[in-house]
Length: 271
Length: 159
Image: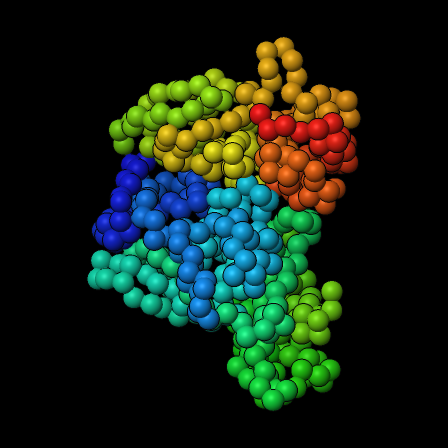
């Protein structure tokens, strides 16, 4: 069924168009919206686009990086300052999908997709959203809880660079390598002070409808050195608060069985 | 819901057509232009059968909104051959038995071209990565990987 395509020069105009029409969807790279149209999704009557260059800007020179919502995963991989995000970007799709899929769109990708968002959740990213009322910054956790009801347009995401390469870890478990949907996806931010972990954040993908934090596992790490006993305690708590579902890639049971195993390996630095 | 005018380069030739809102590049190429080389596989971005180059970058035509290629250069497998002469990649695919049913072959060839245009001397791992978004249900991939490496070994000049 044909839809109306509206292209705007600024993100403000695009956000206003999205806010005023519940059947309008923003098209970034197309990997979600075109897929829905190909499947005959009649809930979409209008496609909104913006040619605003600010949406494809990367500002990575300082300690805090800001990535435009329209930045593709191929662009992330090409940016040396974003080395800490190369592993999550590489874990998505094949080269064509990485040339198309965007950081902003990934925030709306539900299980078994949305791997990049797992990394952003562990990094405590902030999402800039433009609505009819103006622009505002929302914590990623709050954003993910209400993403289906979001009115407006995501402009960018921002986060602090990890203090060291070892402080941020990422792993995607897939059946097909190097490309495949996620069985589970894990990311851990492990800042240390005086040999103890302070402010750990662990994020999981495909363990709930949206990406979630493993807060019990985080509490098991807090204030402790990353030794075998601490890692075991965190791994044992990995499933708390999760609600995985069955799909073609794995059953909910299997996901619950393996999440602790892979969290243990991630924290222990094992392959 | 009106049609909109669209102009782009299709294998070096200027085309000007009208498309319905929401039409994919794949439907545009196959049904409006008559270029049947990009295939419809899954319509979800999972199989790579519709792979084309847009301004030299590998894209999936089924997930590309037609309007977004306005003023850009789209290359498909149809533009690869030179009259009756096979392109070196096509020749390498034939010599290495890299096609069986052939449905994935146009997408595989475009993914391989995107790789070799950027990296004329790829490693085996580079080739595996480059075709990782393209599914083949017949060959087991090995003959395809060998064909791409053979095309590279034969000397690659960007066309």
